[in-house]
Length: 371
Image (cartoon, rainbow, N blue to C red; front, side, top):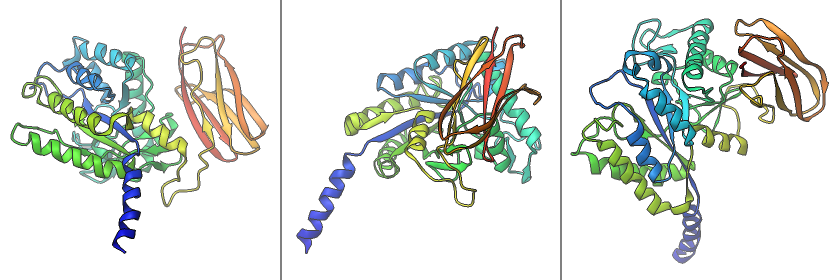
């Protein structure tokens, strides 16, 4: 009996050991108001990760790009450069300050007074942040990281309406947390105020968690925070720690470890097929609205979408104030892929939204007309 049981267990673990692991490095609070640890640049950490084949998702607080700590513009230049190298910018709220209590540990939902900010307030913060990221970095992010991981269903609706596809927060993971919004929850942080005294303990714990929880989930999101990734924090202790961790992972997993940005990993899991969060309405994941191409555009662009079945489709374009500009499609369609051209000749430069409704389900996109 023992031999039979062993025969069953060994192939299982052999198969499990061959599974690949998506590894995501997420750095929050870029750029922190903590100016104690200088220099405040992200380059040393980025270089350490790149040398090992990794990628970073920088959760950027948009308003910090125009605050005093970035008057030199160095952070802006580094973030533009990091995207060109294959890393990612995610939006991390607007200014990381709650408009209700002025607390800095949350923003979109006031956890200190249990107050739900109305749609207009959350939408305004989101759009102001998007504008800053577009104006400063030329980026329209697809992923959102809530400050303090404090959000509500109104937040989800705002994010979907502003064309975010991915969330990284508490709640269901590798699944839709809200129709149109796919969540990939983070795992653990090990380097908050990392010291020499707990260096090896934290490293061993991280390796153990990745080999167990990570392999079970098929992915692992390690969380870090600016300012501790800075070279100025204890002579770059976190930079060295991350390099050592990635060296160990590369040695252990070889080509079975797949370094991805948050959006890349979430998209892969989403496209593989999953279900919506319990308690939500049914959502057909085959209903997809793609980012217009080209974007930015001048004067025309193509909007493509996938319909899960035949029905009635309504596709409209709106300006930043919500005024309807044009109806591009209004009528019956067949199941499958469709494309519609939007010609903006004679229109002013700026941000516009497109909204598609098919059989009562709605998706939205955001595009930039530049002249």
